[in-house]
Image (cartoon, rainbow, N blue to C red):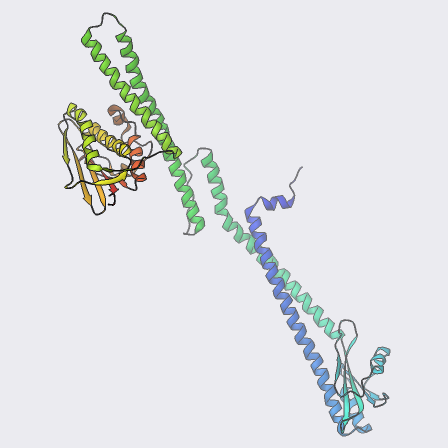
Length: 467
C-alpha cells in the first residue's frame, strides 16, 4: 500500500499546518521561559550556598582574629561537627592546626594552594567539575595574616537539586506541551472547519450546484467570507438563469425577423404579384431588417462592454438640443401608435461634457422602451431641468409599470421583466444595461421610479459642464 509521507499529509491539511505552527510557537515560548526560570533558580541557589559558605568562613576568621589559640580553634571545629560543611584551620606557615573532618587528597590539593598572605577572601565555585566548593578567609591581627580558615561544602547536593529541578521542568513542560498541543489542534480544527466547508462549497459551485448555503456564525473575516461565497453562489445562479433565458430570447429574436425576411423574399420572387402588395412586403422586409440590425448592434455593444472596449468621444454640447433631436426621431413611431409625446424643456440652455452619439443612444433606448410598453392613446413625458450642478432628464411613460421587486434588476445585463410580454413587444433586454453603462461612464446615474400599474420614470442625472 502506497502511503504518503507524513510531511505531505501535514502540507495538505491546513488544520495540521496551523496546529504545528501554533505548537512550535508555544514550544519556543515554553522553552525560553523554562530556560529563564532554570537560570534564575540556579543563580539564586548557588549565590545562596556560596554566600552562606563565605559568611561562615568570615565568621570563624573573625572569632580567631580575636583569640587565635587552641581553645578557640577547638570551639570553631566543634561548631562544624555534624554539618555537611568542613572547616580546616591553618597557621601562617600552612600547617594544619585542626579540621572538622577527614582531609582527603583532593582537599589537600586545595590546601596546598593556600592564599595566606592575601587579605581578601577566596571562593572556588566550580560545582560541576569538583566534588566541593571552597571558601578561604584570612585570619588577621593588626593588619597581618596569621592564619587561614578554609571551608569545604560538598557539591553533590547542588547537582542533585539542579537535576531534580531540570527533571521537574522537563516533566511539567512535556505535560503542558501535550495538553496545550491537543487544545491547539482542536482549536485549529475549529478555525479551519469553516474553510473546509467553503472549499467543499466552491467545489460544488464549480460543478454547477448553486443551491449551496454556508452557515454564517459571527461577524469576523471567516463569516464575511462565507457570506461572500453565498452571495457569489446566488449571483452565479441568477446570471446563469438569465443567460439561459437570454439565449432562448435571442434565438427567438433572431428567428422572427429572419423568418419574415425569408418568407416575404419568397413572396416577392413571384412574378405576378401586385405592385401594392409588393411595396407592402418590401416595407415589412425593411422593418425586420432594421430590427435585426438593432439587435446585432446591441449584441455588439454588449460584447464590447463585457470586454471593457466601449469607446467614447468626449465633446462639449447642449444636452437640451440633443434631447430635441431624439424626440424628432421617435415622434413618427410615437404617432404611429397614437402616443402623445410631451416635452418640458429647461429654462436656459444646458451643456455637458460627453459623447453625444452615446447619449443619443441612451435616450433612444429609453424612449423606445417607453413606446413599447405605453398603450395607444396614452402619453410619454420628457422633462429636462437643472438641479444644482447636474442636468436631470426624466422620461416617464404611462405603461403597466415595473414590480418593485424587479426594479433593481431592470438595468442588469441580460435581464428582462415579464419575458413573454417582452417577446411580444420585441425587446431584447440589452438596451437598458448598455444605457446604464454609458451613463456611468459619463459619471452620471440612471435611476428608475415605478409603481406597478402606474407607469415608470427613468431619471438620468449628468454633471453640468463647467464654464
